[in-house]
Image (cartoon, rainbow, N blue to C red; front, side):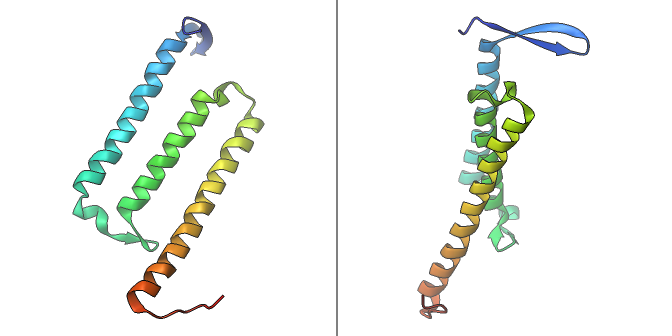
Length: 126
């Protein structure tokens, strides 16, 4: 299967791209994004410690890069590239929406728990 070829048309010319080339491309892209995440996690630049929408810019960068990696893995390894546009939208946008919703819930609840621990005051009693 690694030696199979896929036909792709680029500016009117026919070009064959092997699955091996695609796998190397995915590996390189995911390695670069992961390396950026690791470097930012180790050095934690002071310029990225400002707050936007109640969270550090560095945390937003981590969330965005993680979503980019998840999207690209879905795009390539689940073969969404070869599916119809409507199926791609259903799968990808549903996942993106659910991930963003999960992040929202975690940030809301985490902020409340942190506030209870730091101030000792319970705002909401469920």
